[in-house]
Length: 215
Length: 74
Image 1 (cartoon, rainbow over the protein chains, first blue to last red):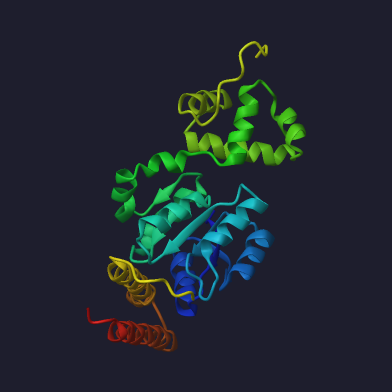
Image 2 (tube, rainbow over the protein chains, first blue to last red):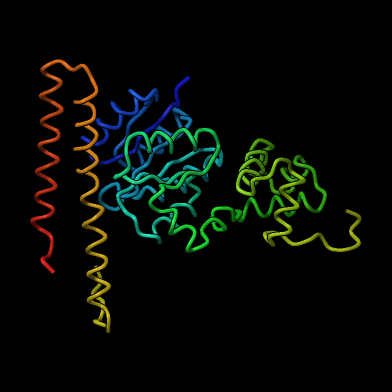
């Protein structure tokens, strides 16, 4: 089955072109939007597998802010940022917002499809032209850095709490906690929760539990 | 926009920002040209669709030209 996709792009011709090209590649473009509010509405309402979001949406509209808001509402959302900008700082800001993909507009349609398919499969994708910058700035570590909420949850798991207990402690739903754990495991490239905790401890993302607390 | 006092290197920073905006501005119409050219090449398209794709390529090409023409010389 094709990837269900929402496209958020302010340039009408590019929006139409992407719909045609990606449709031909097997994506089902379930919605298109031209600004942040429309985009958020579609992402929330249609729950696509992936949202392809332009960073500069015209005026004050900003695809990075859209990504942040979409992930606050549902941390399981998968976003590929699509941009003409190659600045490293924008790349860092984009990845820090929680986007799982970063594709450049001068890439080929097949590269864009690779980005979409990778992110749909739960992987992280960065355009090959920017990978040198990633390595030079050790962005690979930044990609793996846990969000404050993920760190908080991993910290509680490391103290021996169950997922249910963590949800109760943080007044979150179990599903939300599971999503945060899954995202943390993906970022840490861990195969199990215990593995994720071990990596998080080793890399210093969380602190070891206090001695003598019985865990 | 708030005026920023000139500082040493300020011109270079402004030039770099301008270049970054310019490069970003070029890439959207460029993506349109490449995308619709690919559609035109690959798809069996009827005359009306072909004309529509060609129009979009032409418009994006004009946009590219305008961006280049409006770019600072230095």
